[in-house]
Structures are given as C-alpha cells and as structure tokens.
Image (cartoon, rainbow, N blue to C red; front, side, top):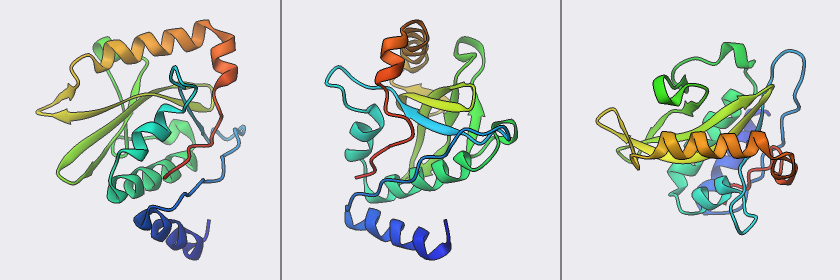
Length: 161
C-alpha cells in the first residue's frame, strides 16, 4: 500500500467511514493473514469491538495490523506484539496505547494465520477483564476442535467502521 492510499484510509477511519483492508495471503515467507472469531450472532468479534472504539483506536489498530500482516511471523517482536507466558502459553497480544489505555487484542497463531479471540486492556500489568487468558484459551480450544466453526470465520476481512 502506498502512502497516498494509507493516508486515504486513515482519513476514512477518522471520519467514521468503512475501511476494509485487503487480506494478506499466507505465503511461504511467513506473511500472516488475520482472522477473527465469530460471536453467537455470526458477527466477527473484531468488527463488534472496533465499532465501539474511537477513531484513534481504530486507526492505531489498523496501523498495527498492517505492520504485522506484512511481517513474517518469525520476525514479530514485542511492540507491536508479544507472546503470552504461563497460563497464556500459546496466545499472543497485539500491543498499542491510545487515549491513555493499553489495548490488548488477544489471539493465537495457526500456521500463517493470527486468529483474534478476545479484546482486553491492560492496567498495572494485569488484563481487564481478569478472565482474559482463560476465555481466550477456551475460545482457541473451541476453534481448533471444531472444523465447522473454523470454516465459518471470515478470513482476513476485518471491517473497520
């Protein structure tokens, strides 16, 4: 994406207009696609979360997403991304700070795909809500064990409104 197109997308985000980034194709060089878990109403949880955020949060998420999706997974590093440890083993967080809030979209890698399963914030080195890791692990397990659920997820098409 060139600078002109990037600027146009950021302007659309600030105005509240819909921006649908082009999906990244999974390739042998490790470039990553993004998927979002679906909720009970068959909506992407990323779309639901983003629709409730400020234009600044949506723009920062879009920026982080674009950097990560163009970076081979093996090169993902802390800020904008960090692997979780302990009970969060197998999960990772996209990290960004906007409006005095540390936002933490949570997901996991499945080959060259990063699947978003939860959205949290961090305060004082702890996630809010407190059950973020447990819920994220439960959702990851459900997706990995249910091929039908996995098929229903709409790959790489996070509608940023």
